[in-house]
Image (tube, rainbow, N blue to C red):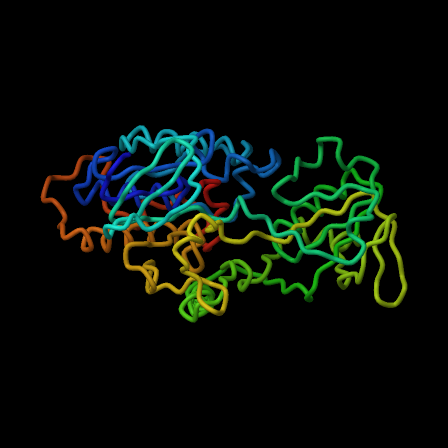
Length: 388
């Protein structure tokens, strides 16, 4: 059995930020803390994104603390750009991420510590920073007749891109009102025989830049739900859809024409409440994700409202546990800030203090303007680590 002061679960944006700040506060990777990652390689959930999601299409990507992401080719797939960046980051700071390690459960060890059961052994720890994101828990709604559908059903988590052959000449129904749904729809429309876009609510589009005040207001709405112990919404879900030139053109062509949610699924397609039917070969569920926190179930952290109540990043019911990249910190900038906050609180729990050793050239303070990638300052949701 391995014993460390802190276990970090997940090596996406939030997990790497947490590890950086733990190291900066004087804790040693591999000795004082360990980072466990479910993914086969660096890159968090970005490594699983479809090939046509190029870096230029990413709405905003804030650099990790201490090391900028600069000079990236906007035409390259974001999975490659960010995967290489995370690889360099882990190497530069010697974070010694262990992968692939599947965290199966976190339980009481019986002596005030936590026991972390994994596919690669057991760790005991005084504190745990959970940065598992959402990618492992795609949300697939259930509708009457779904099991009898003769076509193919996919989720954003399975989306292979428009040129995979999966959509050529097919009739495709895209379900969901978020940015991913719109991106899928516009791509698929170029190769499909026909498309339809359905959402539960009327989409809200916005023109112009996303201001800092709007960003703070959006985060505050998500944070309030978390403080009340309710399941978090994504930050993006309350910001609206940014209207782009490509979206305007698609709307003029009739592609970006929203229809209300169908009532049931029939073997050959979908049916609305008024009896209208549409034939479909493929249903693509762009319906989002849920936090991947099932491994924490033995600790009974959920509130009656269904969520995990936080005070900052700390779980209200257990001060040993911090959730980063959860709720209001589920964005690339929010994950970085949450990692710093969690590391500082964990150090306080351990009774330690920041060391006075001088910083190296690559250990500059986090979250200053020069640590941004130079891209949009919009707070966008990160496809956090596929880590558990």
